[in-house]
Image 1: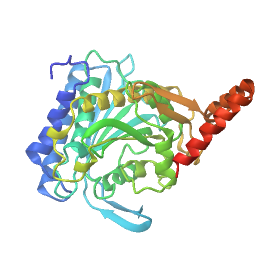
Image 2: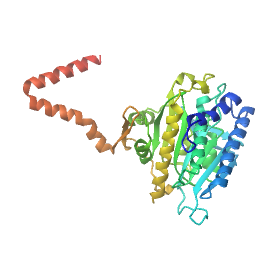
Image 3: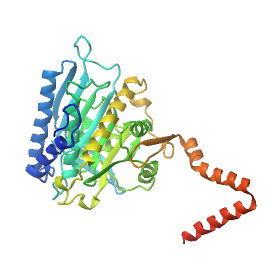
Image 4: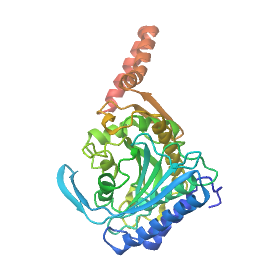
Length: 380
């Protein structure tokens, strides 16, 4: 809370999380708890929007509470189910830069906004301190920093979506994509999630290729590998978040490029009554928030410069075609590039060994063979 006001603060983000998880508690869709959470989130978001209108004439800030009703087909655990919802709640704030003359900025094309998403509902019996009161706190704190007088206007519009229906199989996210007045505006998405009370926050799904590359290059403390991404994709793991809806190519305003991020340590508390704010490891939210902020800025710059952002021009990344990437102990991200470069990168150590063996004569060859034999034995 003592951090400069123009910087992201873990303590300020966790204050929102405590209000939701500690003061309100369990927030299951259709209960009084989620209604109380909706009032809190809407009041906090609207207060920030009002502050921006009063202090930032260079910004166009809009606040909107939307209550969608709809239905969609959902594949869950390899089974198709019909998922219907009525009067769910989406709290949204859109921040756009104004022109120098003060008039409202109108993008030349749709699909120019960065969508940031988190949910404030919980599963049965859980206060949802991490999942996902902490996520809501991160986005509210990021919104506060964005509208601070010392912050630069965003290069592309930013939409903060705080939804009240993720645990009921992504209903509110579908309500945004299918029915929200701003549904045709996002050109990329960052989904903020939690499956544990401690960091690091891990990028475990992505679409489009370029979002993961930008995230790895610009997030201060990225944790991700293409191996995890491919494991989730190819092993058909039962991993479902709102990101599943945003990336759905069958929806008119789906098929969004983006990244799915979640804190993953201490998964023992996930979806239990042990998911409390006091269990969140100090520093986790600070690192998470700074990663999301820098990624948002990079995505906004990309969309502002990109002329190829129409839905019809976005093709989902084919399996095995995405860039290879990894982090160096969470200190920096490394992007290897396309598949051909990744293959060359992975075979480089073998090539070095072959060259070394050839140059070292029979003795060196015998040493490598002995090492290989030992390695094979260790597998059995």
